[in-house]
Image (tube, rainbow, N blue to C red; front, side):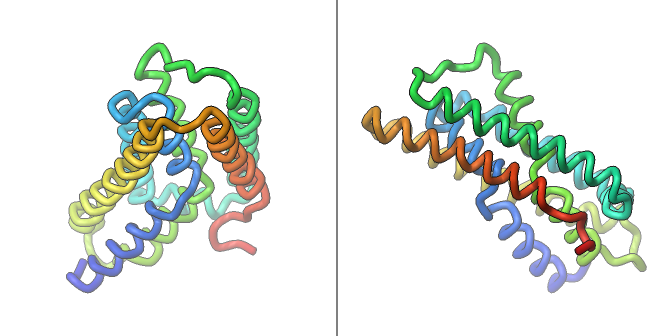
Length: 205
């Protein structure tokens, strides 16, 4: 990958991971309700998902998924239902005291699930590998450039989102504002779920 290609890829990925989506909402919500330190497993989960998707993309899995409307449709509907469930549950729980998860594992796996069914994921990774990977060059050499760049930008973005949420949590928010902010976060999951359920496979209309 040339320097020019790397710069274009880095700019694309920066926009990809900083555009607010379910991951960002979950990071803000975690930071606000349980603090930055306890929210770190959620960031690690997103990085795990990103690493797996980068590896799978390198082997062409996203291309296969995009070419199979049945598989994509099933995955899409399952993901949409999960996001809507999280949103409805979050809305109901917004007026109740925040309960800190018993283990960091629960934070990790919830974040991993959200990241995996994120409606941006398949389209974003498919776009990255269809547009920026050069077929005439060894994929391994390109991955040594793509993976560190993508993971660094991903870690930076969601660390900032988590810190933003933690800052809001420390700002001594009033009970009314706290409830409605949590409801906005919950409603965002529902919106993303509806959007996910209505999307088409990458490259299809």
